[in-house]
Amino acid sequence: MRTLRISMAAVASSALLVSSLHVANAASAPEPAIEAPQGKSNSLDVGTVKDIGGFLEDQLQAVEDVTWEEKATTKKFSDRHFPELMSRSAKQLNLMSAKNLGVQQETIDVVNVNSSEVVVENSEVLSETNEGTKVEYLVRFTRDIAELSDAEDWSELIPYELTIDATGTIRDIVAKDDEYLTTEATMQSLTSEEEEIEVDPTVPGSENDSGTSVSPLPPNVGEMAVAKLSASNKKKVVNYATKWAKSYNPAYRKYGNDCTNFVSQALYAGGWKHVNGYYKSDAKWYGNSSFTSWTWSGAENFYRFARNESKRASRLGSVYSLVPGDVLQYKSAGQKNMSHTMVTTKKINGVPYLSYHTNNTLNKPFTQMKSLKVTWFAHRI
Image 1 (cartoon, one colour):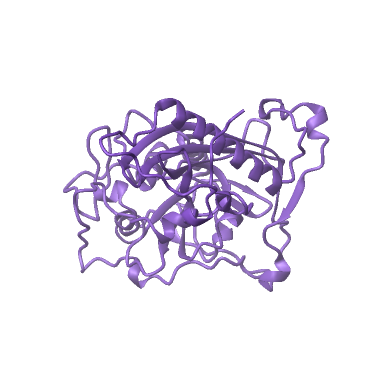
Image 2: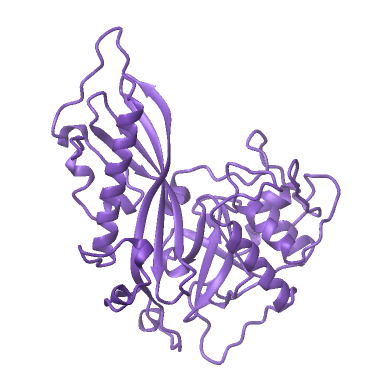
């Protein structure tokens, strides 16, 4: 039995651990914070870090079970395809309705989650002070969705940063999820974290683009954008993204903000050709294990290359017009440049499913992210 302490304010709400809230008030903890005695270490031992990771895993699994109405007697996730488990009724989430959008559509925008699994994959001590120890836990959420085949899941890797005092009491929990990244994190649009963005003022960028609608097109209105890649090539884009969404291809350089780098790799696998030249030029595009152009791994630079320089991508009128192999970007509120890049890997009941890096995610329904306070930019590839 675990005897760890935690501020109960940090787990009282079922929404807590799946949102990007800064949680934990020392005043609400069961015991006051205790400073380490003079001359003694305030470090947590490896066993305590591991045990707290297990506690976090248990709490997040409990939240998942409530969120998706899992039964207390649910079998392990590895057994999710057993007939007795599949016969269990799953919660049908009405994530978006045509009525609320004010238009008629034939799609049914729901997600049926049969079962879910939460696993802490890794932990790292970020800092140690008299205030406490900051530990980052990488938590993998894997959800079995009825709309996907048995071999496919909706998977997300979300970092959780915990501040833990010398007594083992959790004082603060920050979920670095998509909402956190759009509002708190500095999303850089470059291939290098040491450089600052440079854009050519004579080249049109995203600042003159009003973005893409999050409502489906009205009935009888067709999408004007024409695909540049063939269906077979777009399938190659999807296959690559599906294979590497949860990990990294050693044939390419890896970045702290890896989203556009990952999408460029998928597009290269699907038939986009390198355009060699000066690495800062918005007209060039290339990447390998040691070096990349800014357009390959910078979100804003990629937009400029794909839409304005090479014309390899064209604007879609609605996010719901995305098909597998197409690209979706967004710009966080108040930002001049693109913040994030994703690739569409599925489309089910009219809903695009997105895969991306930072955070590493596979087949996330757009309806689970459409409430983000961002401007969307959907590209036909």
